[in-house]
Every structure is written in structure tokens, then in C-alpha cells.
Image (cartoon, rainbow over all chains, first blue to last red; front, top):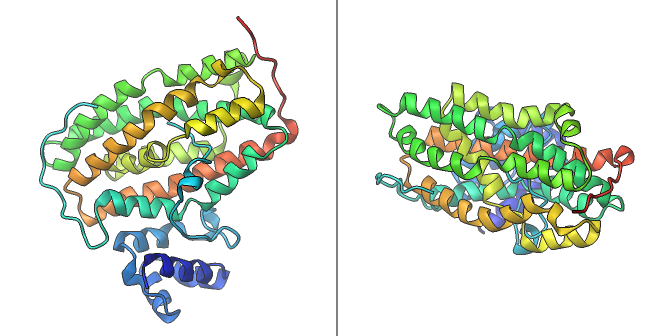
Length: 85
Length: 246
């Protein structure tokens, strides 16, 4: 298993609002993932810590319909309507 | 981009370099931004949405240089005792000059579309734009100015594709000279993104600072997605301007 496989599992896990609630908050993510059979050691440590902070639904960054954690393909990148700052 | 002082590199973890970890964090959050982009590009009123997108872009970009100047001031005040801040001063001083005046490019594009500058400047920015930019001011002033690299990486590390600019020209039917801002950045930003990668990988970032950059980046993706969603959601009231011709 690699990071891609674990991201797929994490995406499925986070589609459930109860799971998102269990995941959010300082120090909650790793135990929640372990309980769900997700090998969080595949993720960069800072990624997990940061995801805990941005995950609450009221942040609007991750929601049940939008959880699709994966790396971007070249085709994805060519279709980003970017805000070039 | 000016040359950067030599600093001991943070050794890559088994997860890769600092920039590789940041790209992972950014990309896994990107789906809402991709979805909003798809809605924008496939919208039947894209000709009306494009000026609205530029107006939102102007709301964001007019803060770019002031924001970097605030981060530079803060980095300079910390530089004597903070090597990360010291390295940032070199980068930001150069990047401010590279970005200066780009807000005017947007106003020029809008003017060619027939949208008056005064009307653009009179538009109240949305709370989402304020949250996007305002969070960067907060992190720069009250945490560490290195946070700004997360914001810049989302934008410059994932630049507008030249093919997308062509698609917009075709889909909207507007003259090509209404797309200068995007066309210039399609050319410039791949280089700026590479520079950001190199800078991040040269900085002696602590775990806390690496997390801060990641938090800045991941929230930037979310806020930018919402900014674009707001543009698309405004389609019902968006007016299609009449481009001016020289």
C-alpha cells in the first residue's frame, strides 16, 4: 500500500460527517485513522496535523461531496481557473 | 528572482522534500477548486462570467504587493535572529518588484472589455476574498511571514495553462487583448513556482513552520475555490459587457 491507496481510504472515511467530527481537532486524526484501518504513517506528518485544522465543515474546504483526496493529473492542472496573485 | 543566500538545507524526510510535501498537501485539497473550475469553464454564460472573474481577481491581486510588503517588513524585523526570515527578505524584496503593477493589467483587461475602472474599484470585495487575503496578513504579522509561501505556492505553483487561455478566448469570443493578465501569468508563473520550490527546499524550516506553510496553502485552496464558486453562482445577474476596440 502507498500514499495513494491510503488517500483513497481516507477520502471514503471522511465522506461520513461523524467521521469528520471524530477526525477534527488537535490530536484526533491519527487515532481516528488507526481505528478505521488507515495507515497514516504513509502521509507526511505535517499533512495530518494541517488536515485536522482545516477539516471542520464550517471551513468549507472539505465537505462530504467534495472529499476526493488525490494528487492532480496533468489534465487536472490544465483546467484550473487560477487566481494568479 | 534575485539570488538567495546559501543556507543549510532541511534534509528531505522519507516523504520527500519540503516542497514535495507541500505539493501533496495542496493537491489533495484541490477537488473543490477543480469542481469550481469545471463549472466556470462549462457555463453557458461564460462570456458574462469572465469579467466577474477578473473583478474578483482584481480584488485579490490589488493586495498582492501590499501583502508582500507587510511580510517583508515583518521578516526584516525578525531577520537578525531568524534565518528563515532572513532568507525571506531576499525573496520577497525581489518578488515584490516582479509582481508590481499586475493589478493594473487586470484593470486594463477589464477596460478593453468595456468595464470602467471606477466600477471595478467601487465593487465591495466579498468576505471570502477578505478571508483569503486577510488570513495571510494575520499569519504574516502574528505568526511568521513564511506562511505567505503557502499562499504563493497555490497560485504560482499551479499556473493558468496557456491552453486554458486559448479556450477562454474561443469560448468567450472576446479579443485576445482582454486576456493579458492570464496570458502573462501562464508564461511567468511556471518559473515563479520553480523558484518557490527551490526556496522552500533551501529554508531551515522547523516542523511548526512547515505546518504553518501547509496550513496557509491548504486554506488558500479552499478560499480560492469558494471565490470561484461565488463568481459562478453570480451568473444569473452577471452582465455581458461590450468590448471596446482600438
